[in-house]
Length: 170
Length: 89
Length: 252
Image (tube, rainbow over all chains, first blue to last red; front, top):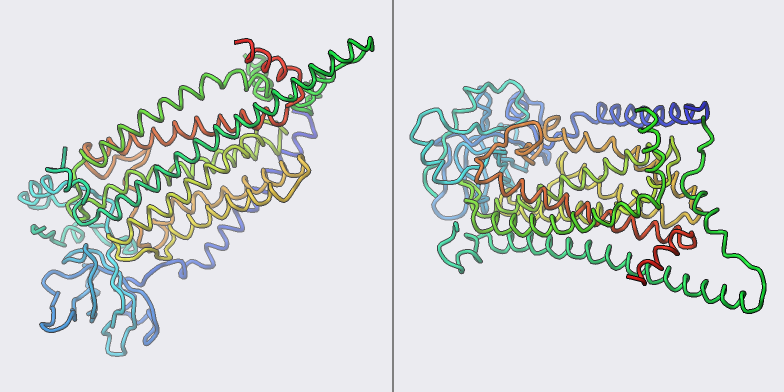
């Protein structure tokens, strides 16, 4: 390689490394802000600010969904299956994928009493796809359910993940 | 076939609007990318052909006028474009 | 061996050689794309089973995932071309960048749009600002940025260097797109399909996806090569070999 070209090679690689370094630094700095929602542990520990619009996420606890008779009001408990959980109040239309055991994102405000008043509910689906027939087959076998993944819980162990049950309706 | 009838296929459960919107836009955009690429090659080809015709007529005229002339700059240019900076050993 | 490699390298730098070689590949990729896309669409829309949770809206995956994969692959290709162009000053790399831009922009827009249309029934929202969607939007703006840069600079050498630099530097966004769903809490689910992992779905669901991905890549081969041929003809319009090619075309 001739010296001129070698010099260009070094310069180009250097530029690329600088760009990568700056980006990595920016990501490092913005770290927390890049997260789209607070996991239940942060809501419980008080890391999530009170009386401020924010997003929180977790899995809908089995048997916790209570609908009020007259309007579209609903309350449920979001949990990480690690001991942290908080209750959510919401009035409005729930997304199709809302069900017990499903990963859910709520947007709204956290009251001082620890109740989350949601103005919007979003469903987070996982990366596993399955035809209904196959799901029924697997539903018969205990423990053969696909894991419902909820990234953001670093300590979630596989056995705690199998806790959510999948509905056999629909 | 997963669906029992054609209407069911069109309805896609209750998600027909979303599914057909996604597939329709994809079909249109992919078709456009292909067509526009063909069209750009065709238009450049047409222009190059016109240039070649013009050049041929010029050389004919030049020959008729018994002038020694050249459209010989082509090969020079070709080499030049084949990538410069090849001076290494 | 080394000599042969070196000769190939120099040949690759020759637009004339490239032009002669690609005529065959354009039609091969074109027919392959038509075949794969037709089979993939019919399979994915009508024969693949619906998802147990999402129902039929899951079929949007068969256009969303290939578009997103191609959007990133094309950008990586432009970045590598930019790097080679900056160091070795090979002309064809700039031709490749120019030819990839329109398709890259189109498939990135498609990935964003189909993702939005998929997000509405599954998430309950057309658009959410999470790590994956934002980094993909950045990818779209990078494509647009390089395109605008090329439009703004008339001088060929400067234009080539500026867009090569932007293409190369912009590749740092690709790992961000890929790992966004692992680094941060996002609404977007992690990848269920990749080169190195087992797909997170049964084969009757991922086989049509594989066919669609192949179709998208074959179409990209056809479109990018066609545009490269057009760009080469445009740049070398007065070269002797172009004149010979034109004469040969008329003769046949």
